[in-house]
Amino acid sequence: MRYNNERYSRQLILQGFGEPAQSRLADARVLVIGAGGLGCPALQYLVSSGVGSIGIIDDDIVSVSNLHRQVLFTTDDIGRLKVEVSSERLQRINPEVDITIYPFKIDSSNVIEVLNGYDFIFDGSDNFTARYLVNDASTLLKKPLIFAAVSGYEGQLAIFNIAGERDERTNYRDLFPIQPKDGEILNCAENGVLGVLPGIIGAMAAGEIIKLITKIGRPLINTLRHYNLLSGEQYEMNISPGANYTLPKTKAELSSIQYGDVDQDAENYTEISAIDLKSLREQSTTLVIDVRERHEYPKLHDKEILPVPLSELESLLAKDISEQNIVFLCQHGIRSATAAELFNEKYGDLKNIYSVKGGITKWSNYF
Amino acid sequence: MEIELVTFGKISELIPNQKIEVEASNTDELQTNLEQLFPNLASMKYKLALNKDIVQSTQELRNNDIIAIMPPFSGG
Image (cartoon, rainbow over all chains, first blue to last red; front, top):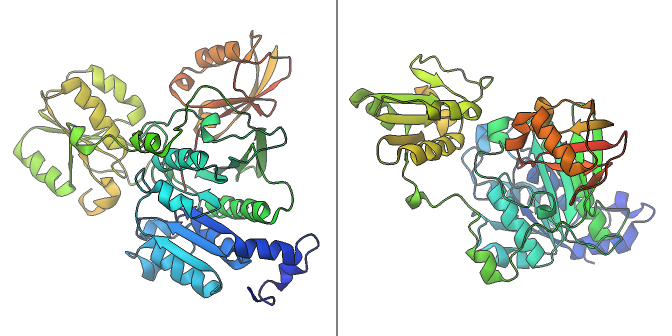
């Protein structure tokens, strides 16, 4: 016997499900990219339902600000690798499932090898670098890709790389052909997210994956579902193939594409800690700019830190700045790096440009 | 003609759901009009859907059409 009938009895007795569907689940291999807000609920249901093999890739550790939405983790897990904690919890939920963990960041050198071992790819990552890489690799390998993403109170869900009724296959680039730059679109850390929202979207994604595996119902193929938690409304749009992009056609081509951030060595601004910032301000004339939007918390009490949201930075770029050092600051150090890059283009070697790495969240005691 | 706008994410902070009167015969012209009406839109990444079909090349517009404006989300 490949699985315990009693464990799955409530879905085995479902009309249109039964043994054939349960066997398909037991044979399926699903890769979950990101054990975060979307990954946690999706994993819980995939594992509980009896998906035979599950891979989890994530290089991150559990932090306290994850706990409001990443429901596999507890306060005691802070500082531990997410993949390790997830694997332990999930294995206790269902020891029949074979779980493989990948405690590193997905990148163009490992993506093909990791994806190759799976039949279905779930993208629950939290950045465009991973999303475009996973999209292109899944499309290259012709693997079904279940896409989910959240922002604020809203979520998006779609299935790519499966032929629809008109025999057309679509991928994420049919929606957004070009990868947004770092800091161009805010992520959860930057924009905020209501804890339950990725729970809903992640569970919806698990539902779609289970439908695909068991061949029941009508999966969201070539359809983008947009969900708004505040209004409770869902808005579904049909996706057709677009023409204004090219995808890597070989593995070599894929690994030659620059998905990630610009190489650190190529940048001329410097990332510093809050400790460095303190000594920098003591040593020479330094302008510190908080590039967060005005509504963001915590508010800073230091009157010498100039608040200029990233969206209004252009006006400051046009003005003359007398200070020799310009330091940018934001919540996590992502937007401040974007700002530093922008100012570096203008000033080059004329001024010293800095970005506080890890931002106010990392150095909360200093601000 | 009258067009209904449905917006998502950050774009709905800029353009709340509304009906607008525009002089545009297709979605390309509408896009130009929208970016004039809402200048911040021009610097944002977004995709249009016409009556729930994602727009890949310009489409004819008719009175009372519904245009959705959707930004990419990356959060997880």
